[in-house]
Amino acid sequence: MMGQRMSIIEDRGPPLEPFPFIRPGEETSPVLGPTAQRHIASNLRTMYNDLVQEPLPEQFLSLIARLDQGHTEGE
Image 1 (tube, rainbow, N blue to C red):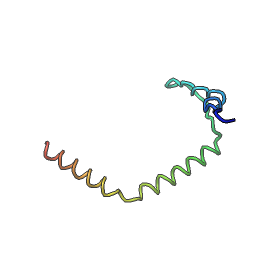
Image 2 (cartoon, rainbow, N blue to C red; image 1 turned 45 degrees about the vertical axis):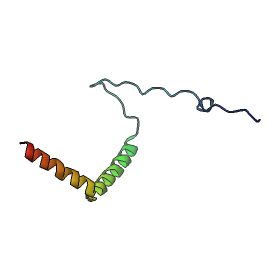
Image 3 (cartoon, rainbow, N blue to C red; image 1 turned 30 degrees about the vertical axis):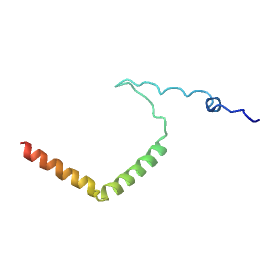
């Protein structure tokens, strides 16, 4: 088997179908059932609530302060 290589492309299988285009206002049915949607929504709310409780990193606070100073000086 020396010198033989398997192509990565050959191992990928059939190409995936592109995501269907949805026009604004066009009715679509949900892909996930209501139980899955509620579970995901609940977990996202929990993650977001935890995230907003975290303090801002010092780098962001310093950047915001510099931007505020520049905005005040430019008025």
